[in-house]
Each structure stands twice: as C-alpha cells, then as structure tokens.
Length: 242
Image (spheres, helix red, strand yellow):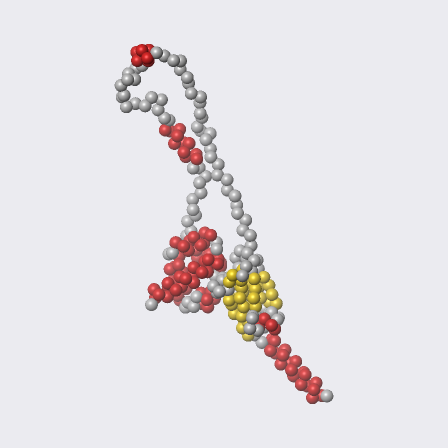
C-alpha cells in the first residue's frame, strides 16, 4: 500500500514538473481564414514577445497556464490561457478581428460670392445708318478690339474659388516612416522573421525608405501590406549584397 502511494506521488511530481517547465508552443494567426503577419504574440507570464511571419505562424517559449496576448494595430486584441493540448501538433490557432476604421467626411464647398451677375442691358433698336453714324468706331471695319469683352479678372477669381479647399496628398518624411516601423515592428521581427543581422537592420530600413511604395503604405496605415513589403524588400536586399 505504501509502495503504491509513493509511486502515485512520484508520478504526480513528474507531471507537475513537466507542466511547469517551459518549451516552445507553436501556432498560427488568421483573419477571416487568411494568414495574418505582423501580429505581436506576448507571453504575459514570462514577458517574451514574438511577431507572426507572413504565413501567420509563430513560436514562443511557454508552459501550461501561461497567458498569451495577441495584439496588432487595427485589430482587436485577444487573450488565451494555455493548456496541455496547446502543446500538441495542432498548436494554438487564433482568429483576429479587424477593427472598423471610421472615415471622416470632408465637405468641399464652392464659393462664388465675389462674382455678381447682373442682368444684361437691352438697348432700343437703332437703324443701320444711326449705328454707323454715331459709333466712334466704324463697325464695318474690324480693328482688333473686342466689344463688351470678357472680364478676365472676375473669371480668374471664380476659378480660384472653385478650387479652394482642394486637399493635397500628404508628403511622408523619413522620420515619420521610422516612427511607423518602430511602432509596428519590433527587433525580433527583423532578426527572426527577416533573418537579418543586427548591424544590417538600419541599412536595410534606409533601403526600404528609398522606395516610394513605403511612404504610400505608411500613409495608408496598412500593417499587413507593410509586413509583406518588408519581406519582399529583404529578398532584394540579399541580392544586392551578393
């Protein structure tokens, strides 16, 4: 009886030690069935942070009972508590929901206050002889002048008013691109996902900033497309180095 109790106690201790030891847990993050890259996976228990790759996959050290947080810009954050089955072959599969982005409506108005239209003046009918005799310029001979010519000053003001309020595309600076990358991609993304060396990261980013598409992605604030862009630029960067 005592031997049986000792064996049971030993197995319980082994199981407890196994559950408390950290080992990699694998998983995949999707949005509406599509892989989602650039999502931060945070082990709240031990403070470890990784980022999902372009296929939405990740691997992070953890143990049973640890709490994982999934977060990304424009995504609703999720939190799960790991159990034993999460360390199996299927791993952790998480679906992220995109947040609704509210668009601000901009109304562009046309102002025509400066241009006042007056009714035309109708002169009484005159005979042909009267017109020829009383006009300072002979109307039968063209002298290059335009009678009752257009008021180009007033027309110019009207055109200026019509285009008032037209918005220009915002110019994205290198500093804004650096801040965007710093806010959305941590160091592990460049070291583990892009497989860059630490001394290559700054040179690689300057190479990306030179591409006009980077400014467009920052202006659109699309983290998923920005992640795919950085992955594709990494391949170009490798070829340039070789």
